[in-house]
Amino acid sequence: MPNMDPKKNPMPVQDPCVRAHNFSEVALGYDERTALDEAARCLNCRTMPCRAGCPVNIDIPAFIAKIREGEFEEAYRVIHKTSSLPAVCGRVCPQETQCEAKCVRGIKGEPVGIGRLERFVADRHNEMMLEDPARPEPNGHRVAVVGSGPSGLTCAGDLAKKGYSVTVFEALHMAGGVLVYGIPEFRLPKKIVAREVETLKKLGVDIETNVIIGKTLTIDELFGMGYEAVFVGSGAGLPNFMNIPGESLKGVYSANEFLTRSNLMKAYLDEPSTPIMKGGRVAVVGGGNVAMDAARTALRLGAEHVYIIYRRSMDELPARREEVEHAMEEGIDFRLLNNPVEILGHNNEADPRDPKNGFVSGIRCVRMELGEPDERGRRRPHEIPGSEFELPVDAVVMAIGTSPNPLIKSTTDGLDVNRHGGIIVDEDGLTSRPGVYAGGDAVTGAATVISAMGAGKIAARAIDAALSGRKE
Image 1 (cartoon, rainbow, N blue to C red):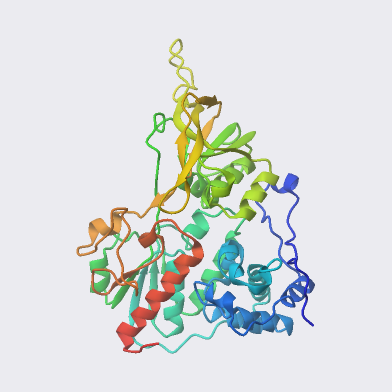
Image 2: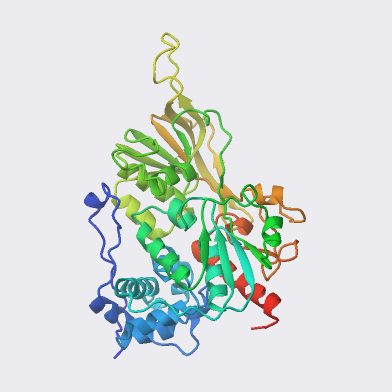
């Protein structure tokens, strides 16, 4: 019998007063009983609108049907046919704007908790690990993948499943890209990413870390080494700043630096190998998921007070609603319709040796009001004259977006980019350079994990068609 409850089963979470002071995962996941109950809410629609909303085209009704039957490992196999990172997607994919947004149950209630069920299935598989994935017969072709973020890992996984010899080149010392340096432990435990990477290795994917394409090796040299195609999934790791006075003061971070120091380099440990500002008052500028991650990380690092400063209202806030609610529950102070105009610093002229000199002392903001919508439909913010005010803070984190790193473009002939630095590709992910494909944030600028995965799948399909002569 279908479960016609209009509300999805709630996700168990840590108490806000407890989790605000630890880096353990906030969401605790469904147990078997809850997963079965939630799966029973699926109507198994013949038209499968949810599948049309998934960028990697997971057969959602089929995997949920397997859950209803208690065939959890079969449910995992259904997902893994098209997704190389199910435990990751079940945690960080914005299902509410994609597959769940298309769910028929959402018309008169809440949609089926598709992401929560995907996480349950993937976690159960990882816990049981009943068998390793079968390694396909090699087809004799070699492909290089630049970057081990979601687009690179997806492209590598899809090609490996078809028998390609794939090597992933990662600039950092750990595979995972933004999944390990950008998303905090309390949202995506690094052991989850490591397990997903290990699954790809068992499929035959080789991963070379500490290799910077454009420095250690060039794309030309990769072709010289016998690789027949190259996929560039190097992400968007170049942070944006506002270019306002005071951004060079000590205590001003890009969100990339702040989160990398904490997530990848474990700056939250008692004796970290990398320094980071702990305690005091912190202002995070921006309203996206990265801003929420930075603000909640600052709180867990011991900040006394954390502000989110965003120039539009709550209705325009681009972060996932779940992350905003979690941040509010934890005590993050949202200062909306405000925009920074200057970062203030200590300057004790009477005592040049004052250790506070050159450090952040505050942030000056101006109040905003919203006008007519812009070309993307968002109402334009305008300054209210004479409304400036100051907030005393000890650190500022700029979380206003990132751009693609220009290194690969500057070291590769014949690779066209747009005015934002994104690599220009056609509908198959092919760049202006023959044999070179690209996808994810290196093309679009900062976007979602699942959209990057979708781009990796498109490129893998095109690479296979080009090298094998097959058309899907």
